[in-house]
Length: 358
Image (tube, rainbow, N blue to C red; front, side, top):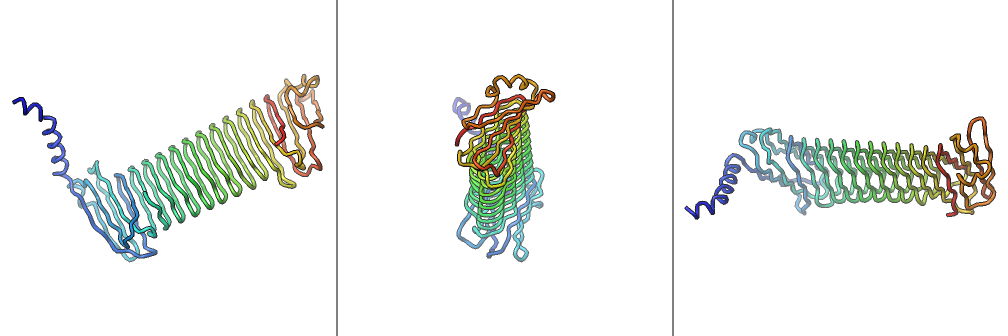
């Protein structure tokens, strides 16, 4: 009797294990493929794990298919397309493991499970999930990912990238060509971008490494950080801080109330405009730059700055001139470096402006 009580938990675990497996089935099977072929996977639920091997074959392991859902599972091949479909509704523990050659084109879809590609693939990849997470290693071709709300983590992408999630975080190591990323509210972190980029989030922070071409960044309220860029830069946030370093080109940056810090090397004839409501603007510019800097203070309190305008504008450069407009309650300051040529407009409502030597 004592031994029975001692081993009761073990008996219960075994009973549950065999009960689950008694009413569930597994499937294993393979299809021969060649370069240019495509794998299409569509499942109502369940996680999907893809790994790469050397064989010219797609091999499927489908686990825990409820006996009532067996009829809703299919694995077929029609010409250059291998299709796996699962429409079951009762298989709560269903998942698939798929082995593919690296060159295969992948189109993967699940109603709510996670999708993971463990190894580098060279074919184009399209992934969609109703709400699960997506994680990939490196992709040597075009990549498209969408999820209703999960997180997305991606390695190095050799071609253009399109990523969207309803609210999760997005992390991309690097993209060699153009990149588009959007999320309903999560943070976005991008290592480097070889082409143009459009990045947006409903409220999270955005951090980007170096961008070889132009970029557009927007967030409903988070912070924005960019570590290097060439070309036209457009960034906006509803209230967060903006940090833009090592920028060569033109910049349009605005925040409702955050601080803006900008290191800018303006190209000849370019126009840049930086605006904040209640925050501080700090501009770093080379003393060799050919630029005109206009600092505009738009709040009434600056009427009194005529006695000591440096209280609100601090510059490492000499030659700043000031103009007070008493009727509008505004103060404007101007600094011309060398021969001018480029223009930078700095606008604050009730903040401060710092112009520093780079």
